[in-house]
Length: 314
Image 1 (cartoon, helix red, strand yellow):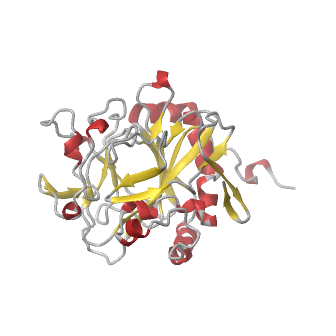
Image 2 (tube, helix red, strand yellow):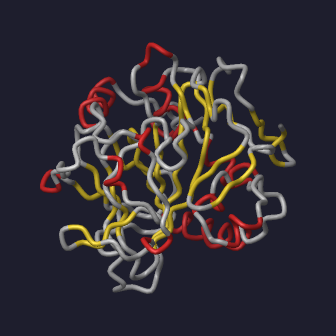
């Protein structure tokens, strides 16, 4: 007979104290999902398998050959481990504690940081219109600004030396940027932007173009670094001021993060759009679908995908 103390945990909901802390500081974690050695093994095999893009939902040759960030979007729609990962109860239960019972995963992204790469600039995201000028998510009318819950999982070790995340706690309640201004993509900015002595860019954009107050600067003295082991994840609002350190190149290993993004299922996803236009590329949403990870779908207009034993079905 299995004793009560040895039974595996099945409910990973946040406690009331954790929910309060999350709403106060805009993030919570890290939590451990995989043991470091398990994550290292999974990433070793997944990294090779992802080279096969034959089933990837985005097949635009120009965007992929240009190496834009779009090319690594939504690989959970064609890779079993990533599809399983976004729906793990250890993640979903905690997200449900914040967003309520009906939740979609609407996007995933890889965030590699190679030796010598610049840090990611301080930024916030509400509607994700920052690059295209067109909202990618819209909360119901009465919600005010919304954003998304981002679950950032360390697929490798993340340290201050190799480019771990940074947060400025409590900055998620007010936007410092106007996403309707739209940033301008410049591939020459991919590794050539220096701000206050630190190399910080944003994948070919300059986030300062969106500032509501052009003279404003984030309070970096209040920033906290999120050092994480392989297999750990952290949960935060996309409207929280966040960035990452540069990879100082003291190790030859890349830092890899995998972000899965969640919204209530009442939120409109890519409203009125049939493509994504970012980072100098454009890809069709023909094969895209959001994934319901808990509860029911409350926005019939959203294109949905379901996971089967043969991959995603639309």
